Image (tube, rainbow, N blue to C red):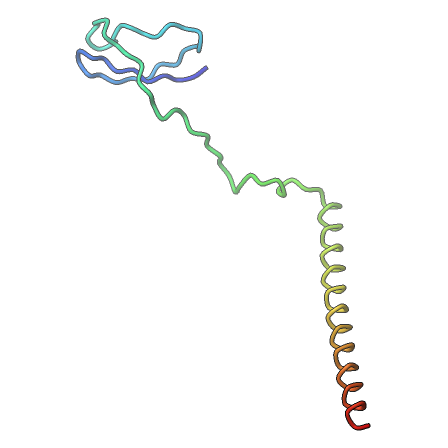
Length: 103
């Protein structure tokens, strides 16, 4: 059930009322008793998360974490190998062009 903000037009008293969505708006002011209360648009209630944090990765199993670590290591090592291969190819091309230039 939501919390609604009310304001009395007669005495300008503001208050919150916890009531059903289907309930009729309150008309009577609890302070002055006049029937000039009106619902106002309020900020509403915020959601409070207490603790260190709530992330999708917080609740992963240890098996998942180990597999993710292994994948990371595998991708890091494959990146290193591909870089060394490309360097070797470029070095061999340079030596081929040098030998062709000598002829």
